Image 1 (cartoon, helix red, strand yellow):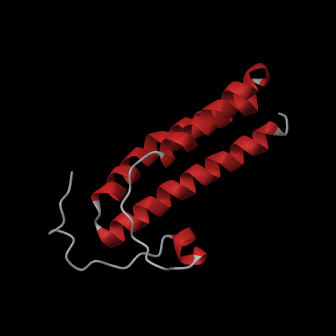
Image 2: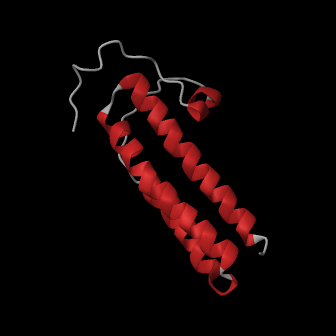
Amino acid sequence: MSYLAYVAGFGVAVTAFLWLRDLRIFSRTGLSGYRKAAYLGVPFTALALLGFFVTAYAEAWEYLGLGLVLLALYLQGRVERENVWHGEGARERFFGSAERTKDKGSRKRL
C-alpha cells in the first residue's frame, strides 16, 4: 500500500462530505437541485470508494483507482444546484448552513 492510498482515502472523505452537505441543504430548503445532488451523491461516493480499494489493494492499478476517485469528484461537481447563499461567509458555506424553509411542499420538485 503506497502513499497514493492515503490520497485516495482523502478523496473518498471529501466526496462523502460533499454528499452529506448536499443532503443537509436539501433537508433544510427542499430545493430540487440539492435533492438530485443528494441522490446522485450515493453512487458517486460508491465510485470513489471503489477507486480507493483499487488504489489500496491493486498496486499495479493504483493510478486507475485515483482516476476513479477524481472522476467521482468531477461528476459530483457537475450536478446543477440552486444558489442558496447570499453574502454568507466561508464557514457557513463549508458546513451547508442554509436558511430553513417552512413550507417545503410548495416548491417545484423533479
